[in-house]
Amino acid sequence: MKVASELAMGKRVLVFSSIGHALMHMMTAFYAVIVLTLAVTWDLAPERLLELYAPSAILLGVMSLPAGWASDRFGAPLMMVVMFVGLGLSSIACGLVAKGDTFALMLALCGLGVFGAIYHSVGIGWIIRTAKEQGHAMGVNGLWGSAGLALYGIVPGVLISLASWRAAFIVPGIVCVAVGVLLAWQIRQGKVGDRPMPVTAGMQTGKREFWRVFSVLSVTMALEGIVWAAVMFGAALVFETRLAGDIASLRALLASWGLATQVVLWVGLATSMIYVVSGIAQYAMGRTIIDRYPLKSTYVVASALQVPAMLALAMGNGYLALLGAIASAVLSSASGPIENILIARYTPSHYHGLGFGAKFVVALGASPIAIMLIAWVRETTGSLELLFLSLSGVAVAITLVALLLPSGERARVVGVAAPQPAE
Image 1 (tube, rainbow, N blue to C red):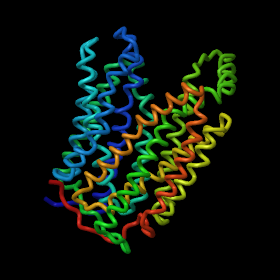
Image 2 (cartoon, one colour):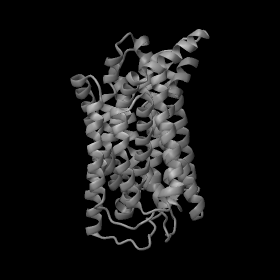
Image 3 (cartoon, helix red, strand yellow):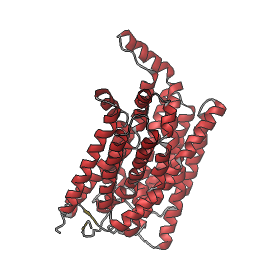
Image 4 (cartoon, rainbow, N blue to C red):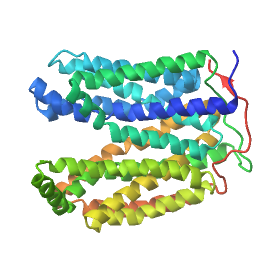
């Protein structure tokens, strides 16, 4: 089977992996919006319906490791097809559940977790192996992921308004299956494949270097996962109180024009702004920073700058807290691609799936810790100031541990390996 040129293949891989990133983030989060309408339709409490998603959320993290193993065994292109088709069919199944059948809905939601878990273990390593400029490619991919986060409330909201909650599940599901079929066709045509990890000049690899990188990143990724989840789940609670006066003024102004709005709308817009800006910043940093400067230096600086970001969230007024949350998300957007590139470089190509699977088990496993901390600190103190003050200390610890990483490598690769067809 004839394989497309290296450059053309890399571009196609980036397109399919980026679409997968957006769809995965959107489709593993949009139930939080759909459930509001579902609660009215089924006459059940929203919190009761939200509980149905708990097994799916657990599977989204736990299944990353076996998904990575399957990628190493069967190839990234094939596993991406499985992800698209499986995620799509699971979403369609959610939309076809009989009214009031909570058990069937829970099972269908579990499918979203199982197939959504494939993406990070497979898609990111696939991009890094096939990209000419790794930092730029990771920036583009991150932008699409942020778009998925930004759209998870908009897409179901529009589909529910135009049709029903069933359409909010079924339409994205059909789109996802269609992308999977298109990817399978491109693989069969030899236009999409994979290749071994390109060689990077000046980089020493071996068991000692692998364990050094793996040990350091295991600590930093776990701690960063807590910081990231704390901002994602806690920022809205901060904005609700510290932007209360500004939100009240905006609501009063719009009300004078005959437009009634809810507080949650403005809090939601502020929260969405975090990830819109961070997605754009991740793309820009991939082009201008990660490809040009040493990975370790960039990683250490990004970790250190999390300290003032956490302090702004802890003690700043409404707008300063918003800037702190945006800064934290932007800095996480810089750190994530560097971690991915280091994992890809120091892990043998035939173990990339396991490497990325292990990363996201660690990273996603930290989210429940952050959620429990938010609940405990807010219940105990009435605010989240103590939480973010403590996380500024965590950011210091991340910076110190990151200093133990190997030095000198940049994201841009200088060696190439021949592209290989998907099996």
